[in-house]
Image (tube, rainbow over all chains, first blue to last red; front, side):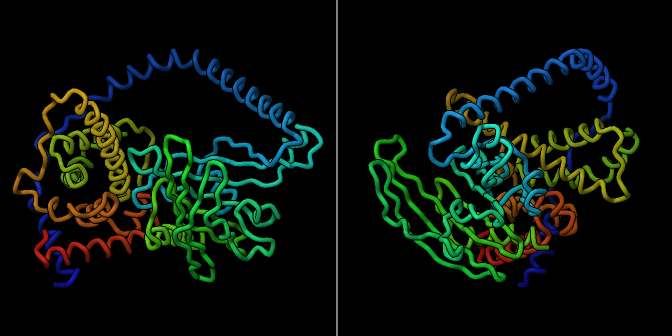
Length: 262
Length: 160
């Protein structure tokens, strides 16, 4: 039997499916309109109050963030995170994020900004940035932990190598942190492979981290990182709390690459 | 949206949208709810205009969202059931013998189920399926062919 013949069987099976029992009557419109008017009266008053409240919160958040930076001006590298959107990320890097990759469904987007460390004041740091990344997170329905995260940054600013873990030549992904340990964390790379695809070099890594002294002592994750020099972007696709097979991870990456190359 | 237009759409698409919801949810009562909610939402959308034939994909998109709302609600209820241990389970579609299509696609994952259902029940093109699900056309084609082949093999081997 061919696939096409089986398709015919499926189509025939549809005819055996039941039909809806109830016939719907369209009588809801007037009721809905009445409700809408009532809501609008409240909304007219609430709307300016809400807008003002959000504005105050935004200004406050920027002020607090700026002050925090000012206090840590001489500290190490840090990042500012703020809410973003898929559309904004797509516009910035000219890529396309799907609604879902396999069972991972879109959850939220985050803008990550590494402020300029040479800035002389927090205001200076606010207006100039060393590097910025858009990170889009997908999660498996019903799970808060199993995440697929896609981070995209440009390759114009030199900081991209540091951010994505590449060496100075910008060619090789840093795979040397095998069995690295410190007081609390031991990381082990359990699989690594360089995959060639459509002129790109995709680095596939499966990693397990053990956290000593935490409630959750083990975290498994899979990463796929590649640089698209033609497009001027570096992409990191990684999972949390789940090891994915190479084929599945590569499938998601191929879908993403096809999305921005077509 | 105009009640007359919605009534026409209902006449034209209600059976296939009901069957699509049934394939995704596997429950007749929930499928009825999805059907009703889909057309109620369509009714509330004022000022929408569709070129002829384009409304079908949009209705499927709305129906799909309704299905997900019900699945989310069901998940919350199941959680509550575990605590109360007193609520009767919903009648599963697999308990009836006439719903062969649902059984045939039962082994697929949720996305592939949607793709196969939209193609077979709704007769949507790959482009329309891609629009409804928010994935690429090539991705839709690949997943559809893989899913059909998988089911065909299982069918030949007598697993379904």
